Image (cartoon, rainbow, N blue to C red):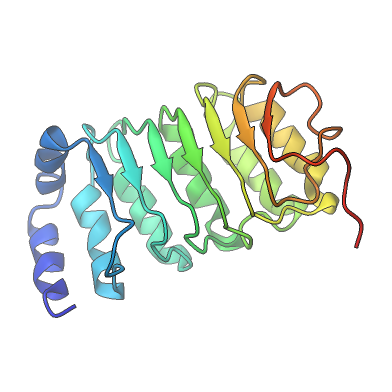
Length: 206
């Protein structure tokens, strides 16, 4: 967009002030809209959101977050001070393995109640990815989480045990867990979690 450089520079000048002033009047921000944020627009997000503590809902669905350096800069900005995010939408953001620990840091720092990771099929691919997320979030990070969406993350049976350990370690057993579209996350594997959605009774072969 032609105005992207203008907004980027405005966000840079207003870093730590503009975003907080906006959040006080609008504690919910939604970036899931057309046109999508360009490279320049995404570069301005860390400046806009730096140190914002009055923001309680942030929807970044369909914003491209495949660049791990951009994700690290965004997380670093959001975790200045004490973030107060209760709802975080990261569906279809193209998150990948290189972004796991940065996202884990954000999850650990925020008092989240709802987290949407739908459609990020390149995010949790190996045991090492899931273990990294578990280690970063820790056993206190998501204890207030009430709803977790992992729809269509294509989690495979090979890493299902690690995913269960993550859920047992970082989350409460009574959270609403939506796992449709994940062959590895079956009712048997997730036995003990009381609110399951889209869960297969057994692993699908092939």
